[in-house]
Image 1 (tube, rainbow, N blue to C red):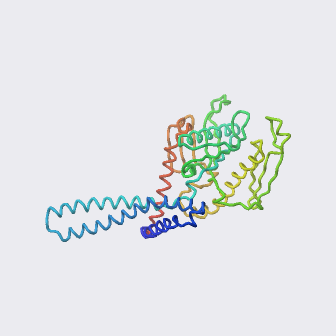
Image 2 (cartoon, rainbow, N blue to C red):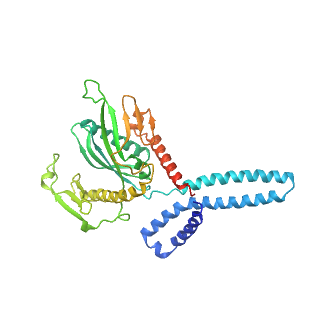
Image 3 (cartoon, one colour):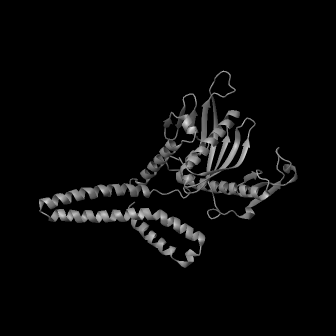
Length: 359
């Protein structure tokens, strides 16, 4: 792994040269890409340079020890050598963690889709609980939450809800929420006090900007129609609803939330781009994940990942065997303990792969 260190330093110097190139400065997208790359490389290069310096100092100190017969000088050199070796060990650990391949989507905003699944009304009510949980968590992180589309039931549950969460490294934390979430509780309508089991599914997709993923306009069929449903006469007068179909993947997004056809089209396009981008990435990732022991980030979305047990006030994440007896706190958005544990576990798996038998 440490053979890569010199190439990182070389790339860092190359990026800095490019950042002063007039042709790069005039290209906004290229300038942004290189600025991000420079900020990512800088802390790594600083650690690598210090690591190299410490190695040189260790060599010099060992040479002093081998040549010096003065007891006092030798003792000082031994202390210095011990300190340098400890620092080298710490730097090696830090560099190994930094060298874990970064998910290119980690810095992106996300589009999240929550759907009530098995369990009827109770599943749809639980979908609303999950919406509240993620909204509170996002607020605690200083992120912005926007509900893009929602299908609300008569009892206040959600058949499905789509939201955009924007902020610093949103995907890096919420990508682990992909999958089926199970709830065990006594419904309010249950007269016998029996515990019912229901599920809601969560899909987390990185926001795909045009710079990341471009969809050919010729691949999209656009249908304009009259919005349906109660709540205003405009639904019968204005053809404002939009349905977009990505023909190659048969991905369909319909939007009628806004009175403006343009706004509905913008929202629909944002979701369509994310879904198509997600499909492409899922196909690529399935090949990468084939040999991995754990698929926390982009695992099977039908897989049950977590159980919320109300009678026991228990939340269990089945992927890492983590159980926390603070259900109310977690549903209030205090997800840090679970998400941090998932990040550590995922990084540990990646580090083990990085330190394989040939490293």
